[in-house]
Length: 370
Image (cartoon, rainbow, N blue to C red; front, side, top):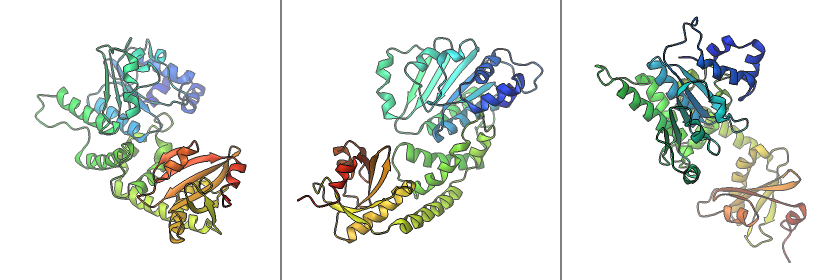
């Protein structure tokens, strides 16, 4: 399979450096076009048409989907170019025109506007995967899709799970007469990857039902910087080595450290009259300079607030862009902080929400409305 390092052999060192720095650079566009004329001298170049996989960066659903595409094409000895797709500096459909790709996979996204539709005009087969409810709402705007555009949106499973299933089934169908069962991964690797994907799916679908799921994702966030296959050509090997037990241990340790740090920052909390008392009273603290611990501080304040006979809500306040940001947290399942946040132009969920106030508005919240 053709990987980025192979493509870089035909690119100048300056351009190669540019490719690693930017998602859509002159070097990356040159690398894409080089698939039209693969080097015959390279032993890694393989016969047949080239295929393209673009994955949503920096999501783990996108990265594990790209892993599945990589494994499938390597198993069958097919040329594949894998690139991260970032909304910060997105590729354009025309960037891939003339490169001669036989198929394109959009992994964990369908692209901006009519991106997928435009790709299907010059790539014989385009398959897109997504799991977001918001993406479903965009489909009617695309109108009637051509037969070579297959958009697969399944809100019941993460894109990572959907793509792994897709390429596993596709590998089996490619070798129907094989006497041995073909799998993308060996048994040990498959179990390890499958366990991680379950946790990725738990967060993607906002279920948070697996044991210590939040601790798992606390540790997983540290791996996010490695998900760019351009700057990190070993990303797929690293993804296969991630282990749920190790991530849970790291996550719980990090969570405990953050909690202890948050407790040390809680000094002299004051009473906050939510909505000038309209939504009751709770304990609050200013956390300017320590906003990264606002979640943990808020949860601790929520418990302290309940013990003090106030609403079981913790309010963490800090300056942000000239306004005071109010982060509300609760450990009580019957309390909905989002109703307060939404009343003041913010949002969130029942247990965690935020909004912003001007200083004069906030001052009216820290003294009882008389």
